Image (cartoon, rainbow, N blue to C red; front, side, top):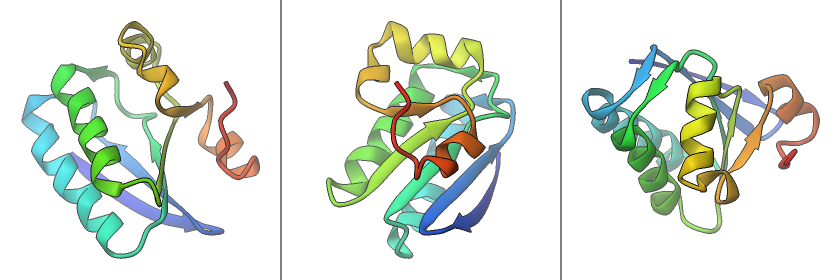
Length: 115
């Protein structure tokens, strides 16, 4: 999985380029996000538009990143596919994470939850 990073007005957008976030990708994902956070990113928006499949390992990796970032930093997600959104809904993680319909919508709202 390739990770692309860009900055927009204090929000670090991390685009996950790969169709899956599963056990095979989760270690690399966690390392990449830890490095981004350690370099000073306080507000991260994950662009999930390329992710078409995510298993429990992928979800666990995202939860781990959230915990590692701590309460002083923010992790939000945008552009979830219907399958990935269903994983968040079934596990009630949609109540823990701030989810956005689109990356542009998240950025224009200052990356505040849209519900």
